Length: 253
Length: 253
DNA sequence: AAGTGGTCTAGACCACAGA
DNA sequence: CTGTGGTCTAGACCACTTT
Image (cartoon, rainbow over all chains, first blue to last red; front, side, top):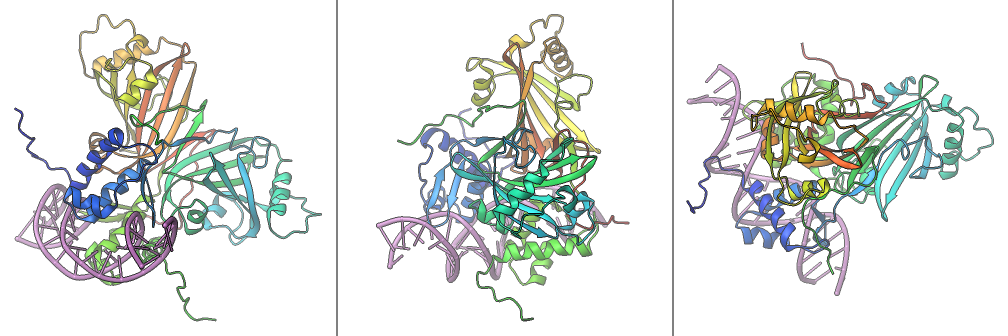
């Protein structure tokens, strides 16, 4: 009857903790509010700190919490919708481009990239680094690989690297007619350089959006964009700014 | 010159381990091959088992490894491309539908769902459970929420639940004209029921695809599909079956 | 029964942010 | 400097699969 449920198939402590904390977040905390520190929380729930941390990790993965070393754990705002539609992921450098050019270099791409670009192994390609900012914070870091044949006429550009050269490369790319593009999303973990740019630790979960730009029947460019998985909800299709969030949430005063 | 790099900013052991193991996977292992057990591996690298496990978790998150309790850790095949295009995520029940109907019930949806459906709180909606199989293994579990007004004429259907009723509901839904749909992808963790259906443990990382089907200017149905993040690469846009994988991979004999 | 990965503990020390 | 989260250890036991 009113007795406490006997755990016939006991769920792991950390999972139960996750549920308890999740409900507490819904009902007793506001966005931006700081949680008690991990040692206190662990003591309060009568578990080891490692177990408590396992629960927090889950909630961070789900975008409910934000943890920063030296600062503390705060309640995260609902994830922001970020469009990865053809409009925003259009020909790099185009008018409706959501990206900001950072740097450019001529480098030999990773084997997996070289393979889809059909370029020979060890053949250097233009590598443009870009970043995307939304609502005032960095949400994605991108590496754009552009084979040399896609941008023929780079005369008059003396800069061997830098943002100026990047813009020149993208401008050249515009001259090609984009046939179509192929997109894919998958889960990954941030490499050290991406992590730095996204203000996260290495290994942080990211959504990797791979876009193959096809012109004249060939792959004219390949974009590998890593989005912060904790803060972003990628929208596509006929999308707009659908708002779906986890539960009751109030804003801190 | 040829001296070993002094770790001025020492990276975490587990991260270094991840890199070492990742390279070993590329060069010395074939898909499906079984790795040494965790205790042996930890001993071999001179670290605690927990640290070794942190590295393995990373690699599993990246889809490089597959771990099964009681069995062992094996090298995972490259992720399979799964289309989440309008073609596959079309009007549920349509001709090119990739989904298999499992069950149906009339239930009160979670608050977040009720909100986007514009139905009143505590108002039950048709809840259809479906599953998607690709290459012989389950890749996604879906919950489809359909407000009562979207499927008016359910007379002649006596079954209060079950696959038969589910099909009837979807058939009724077809009579509406689909205006457009809005899609979003985000990272989540598998709830207990989804986890069971996906043959994973609760909390396993999943890609949650939320689709809002819009007809007559209203949300006629809402689909929440959770895809296994470890085995799936979601493709969309003008996509096909782009093959991008991590490195040299051979198949076990 | 034996061997695997999964959970959990109670500690320790480190890196970093802020006062 | 203090307090925070991040890393790491050396154990123990549990749940599960296979033999």
